Length: 152
Image (cartoon, rainbow, N blue to C red; front, side, top):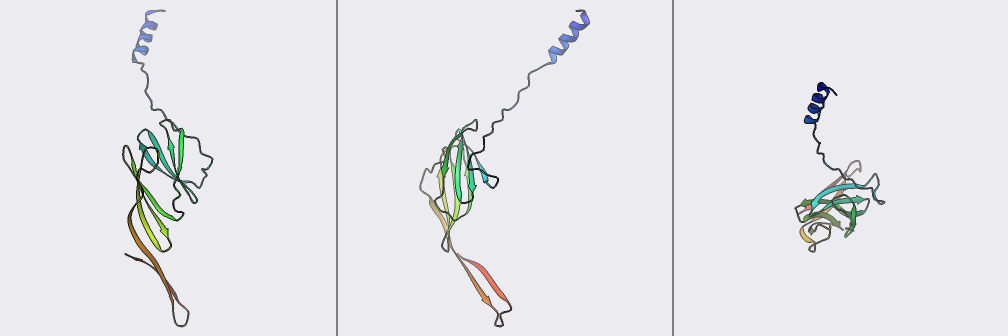
């Protein structure tokens, strides 16, 4: 090797460096999941990642470890008439705020979840409201009106 080759090799090796990259983990789809599965990523709670999944009438929380391997699937079907659900995540727990309808009453409930997706306390009733509706028609039956009202 001549001096130019040695110098070129030294320059190349002196500017080389190792690149640090993030590790990406993903989970395999669960048997119950379909294209119509609605989901919401609750977040990282403790050392686990919690994901809320809704398949038709099934409401579940899937619990994954840090490498996105399924640890547990918690069934939340306390009521089959859920209207809405939302999550407020913290570092060591999350609050699940959900609404469900029973007859003509709409309930708003809150429950505290741990990092395993299990309830830490019994659900707390935050609010209720009565739902009603009415219909009327004109005397000659050419017009129909229907209105929805909340009684607060």
